[in-house]
Amino acid sequence: MVLCTGVGGNMFELKGKVALVTGASQGIGEVIAHKLAIQGAMVVCGSLPSTEGDLQNVVAAIKAAGGSADYVLMDMLNAESVKLAVNTTVERHGALHVLVNNAGVTKDKLMIQMKEDEYDLVLDINLKGSWLASQAAAKPMMKQRWGRIINIASVVGQMGNAGQSNYATSKAGLIGLTKTVARELASRNITCNAVAPGYIATKMTEILSDEVKDAFVKQIPLGRMGTSEDIANAVAFLCSEEAGYISGATIPVNGGMLMP
Image (cartoon, rainbow, N blue to C red; front, side, top):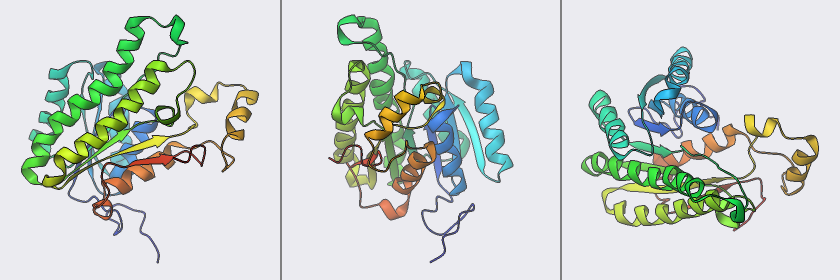
């Protein structure tokens, strides 16, 4: 079977769906936004007001590639800002079918050295922010009796990692949130799943020494770091009709580094 890779392809098609991707101004979120647009969705890219220029560039690139895109400004630390972003998406585009909770931060430090505000900030953005967005998105999804919520977790939320007590806790909590939301919304034909990336090649990892990168790769059976496209492909599948009987799952995209 030959798979269509352009807008409006048959498998994993999202034509007619509206998707909100948080943290979409760069990195994994940006690539997810492009992927969902390729699959036919109207993609609304969300991020902080300070990233508006980057959001405009992402939207322009998606449109130049033949996709449909828009953007909203949102601060995951502010409940009203999150609600407004969801409501604005629905007002502009008539619905909200897909929410990808990708926005997140790190403040890495050994637990004994970590300050309370550094712990709180990561939990508030990564976990509470995803809860706020899911709560807001659930309302239009319940009315239309169809929805997909995908949370971007992490392998460190499954196995822990020294120097990331705040980040690992936030991502472990996100997995628990995923399972609970999946149970609460299942009767309305809304699924909720998590994608747990392993070591992913990003701008942050580019600055690491070859020795550090080699140490990472040695832990990965597939022998390479992942890419943002690997994550986006998993997200696109979970958004689709074909994934309609998958809910409450955490999909590991880690090259075999951790096999739950």
